[in-house]
Image 1 (tube, rainbow, N blue to C red):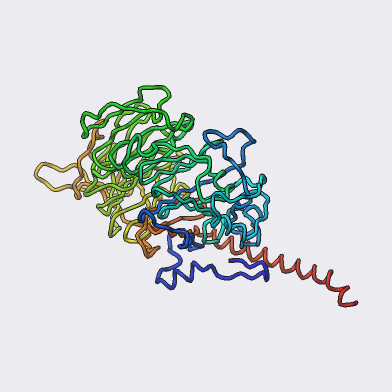
Image 2: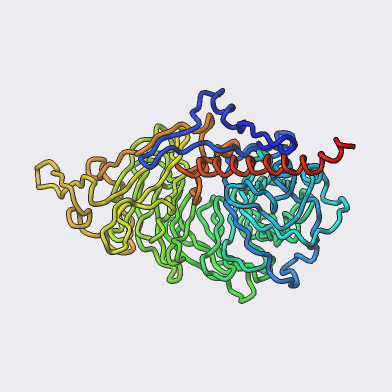
Length: 546
């Protein structure tokens, strides 16, 4: 925390909290130390837990420049900006998001100055309170969106303030999943799925501009379970889909919506004839919303993820299967079963070549789109794996001269409270060869595809692999980062974010970043002290003479 009254810097409270709980505030990698920079949490007084606890998920949202004024879309006629926003760092340098010179990424918002009292008001005021309009606030910046209990909390990533800058409460159900459309040019860019099955789309900027604790300008889909009354489990925007989004449910069905259509459009689908088979049904009318239903599996769909080009959609479920679909063709491409139990999470590499999955078998599985099968198992967690992600900002020290990625860095978190970092280099792992009849398997170092079984047939699901037949990889780093079970992780250019099921978020700065920020802070404060000294001598001199 920085105190501008006296120009002093105090050690962030996150370090003290971590040390008091027996957790280290750093972990080592070959590139250097990742250091705990600060934490995000939620005021317990704002939690009602009216509908029971839920597992916290986190979405990273980057708001770009405010678009040119236009008529709000959908049901957002109630649009109104207010000064109740909203600075997560109102106490930091005594100003709003746009004027923090010491932020490690850059301030959020425009050139505004909001007192800390207005920030507190934004959390405590009711949605019906009258407020002034602040048309200068555009919300530009990077935010963290998290669900805890019956609320959605929005925090400023670029501030060291622990508390959120906005809370949104739901009266009838808990929010359980959310997604932000990074490419949305205008209109709604945030999806929120509820435990009741209801789904909302809203403008994140509009929520930040409103002082209340209720959604404003929202489109309401699947209202009161009119389409599907089972729990929402995952929501995602379709990359390049022009406002299309996908909602997965606990009954194994997935629905495709279009935000530009009426949210209450009548939709009816044909009866599912075989619950064990994948099937797609389209709405009968052009104005219907949702426009399609995909029946994926029996039991819950736990997570869904698009490849970055939007060509493929991966789903994982309670039945233990990863399934990969060609989205435009609506066809199953490949997939397979976990070693044991349900699969809970999945993630794509940036180039679309690999998929990570994690689940109840405590393993991180690496699937190859080229081979259409699992090509490596990561062993290191002591409990269920709840979150996986590739680090797209990490630069591989190795290159093959072609510009193609030959080594990948990825991370995983689990209910064992650990963050694990892994390096995947297919040419270096030990690969089981095909067994000779009656003999034991042999092993070799080399390319997976040239030494292992043939590529799996298109459109088939592979059975669970034998533990003896899959190459094993070990984590590069294993670090206990929270006291509670973890639910997710996010990589950014400057940091790694970890979140626990109770809603506490930690930001770990990459090697070199924290040092550079510290030196910049010291230099700035030193310059500020000099300026104050010069200023006081100029202003105070004549007074003393008088």
